[in-house]
Amino acid sequence: MKVQTIMADLERKHPGENEYLQAVREVLESIEEVYNIHPEFEKAKIVERMVEPDRIFTFRVTWVDDRGEIQTNLGYRIQFNSAIGPYKGGIRFHKAVNPSMLKFLGFEQTFKNALTTLPMGGAKGGSDFDPVGKSDAEIMRFCQAFMWELWNNIGPDTDVPAGDVGVGGREIGYMYGMYKKLAREYNTGVLTGKGMTWGGSLIRPEATGFGALYFVEHMLAKAGKSIKGATVAISGFGNVAWGAATKATELGAKVIAISGPDGVVYNPEGMNKEKLDYMLVLRASNQNVVAPFAEKFPDATFIPAKKAWSIKCDIALPCAFQNELNGDDAAELLANGTWCAAEVSNMGCTPEAIAAFQNAGILFAPGKAVNAGGVATSGLEMTQNAMHISWSAAEVDQKLHYIMESIHAACVKYGTQEDGYINYVKGANIAGFMKVAQAMLEQGIV
Ligand code: GLU
Image (spheres, rainbow, N blue to C red):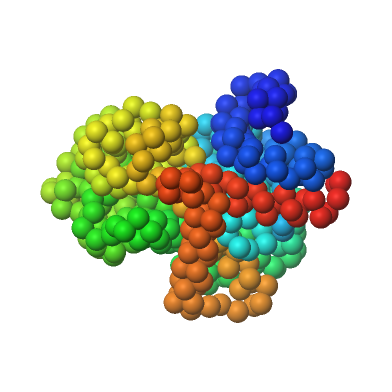
């Protein structure tokens, strides 16, 4: 395989799909060496097949807002790869959603899901619907209209959506309600991230953030370091940021920054239960601003228009959106002494930022390994639904621990360089790729 040739071809076929091309390039560059010693992969054109989604559904979503005006949005579901199991991945509601964003997310999901040790293929969906400022009734009508189009293409053994940016328990509830009505099927396994009284799994809301911190703990232990007493800067204040802040605090770290599109909150005293609970209130308000946090807690200061990366910290955890930490941000963090960065958001760092961290020799791990605890716990939710039982929080948490440990071990196995530095990007990409490639090879040309 020649990465340049494949990328040139993809750029010609999909011009301007920058996030998608960025995600593919990162994976291909990491796996090139391994791929080239497997002529059977080359012969079966595994890479050429793997970089294109199996299929994309695009649909119009029309709904009526609170003023009685008719609104039209675009909806998508991208079924990327089913080599190791039914399609699985979240739904994103955000004004910037477009096919490139969802293709990058579906591609990443394929490898992430392979890393979880569970049998799940990769998918992603979403809409350019902007939840900011919408009422609860508007959110419900939009979710219902979205599901009206989607229901026929999903199912517990075909494609299982879940949440992502802009989609949490409330949205999953509205979508599930409409799914049941249309499909006349009462199988809870069609969606994950459900409420606790109707098939949801304990620990699923916390799982992405908790899993990320379990991964970071392993990374630090391997490097002979500890999270106790470390300062942590987190971007975002939604579900993922909340889970990460909660677990980091529990493990003895001090979360000194959270952020929003409006700026950063500097929180030198760290988090406590009241502050963590308030993050959820902020998220549920649908205003997408973090400034009120500093009004409520006078020991914190709001700095407008600044990112979390402007705060001096030991550990940086991007928890919001793709490419939210760029080369300049990485330089600022490094100058301030940051010694660990782990992507909790999908593709949270630009290629320049990753190169800066790796060249500086600090600990760095990519989203598809670090945040895989979210989808892994979705997989555990599917298992419980299929068995018609529910496990205790302790049982789910223990399985999540085991999965994150396995992902870390896989990264170390494939990512340890001759000089001893662990390239977690390479490790995660190769481990995920090998599993999907082998499955595709054994299933023939389909
Ligand atoms: N959206 C999450 C992710 O990026 C979770 C997906 C899922 O649970 O299916 O992995």
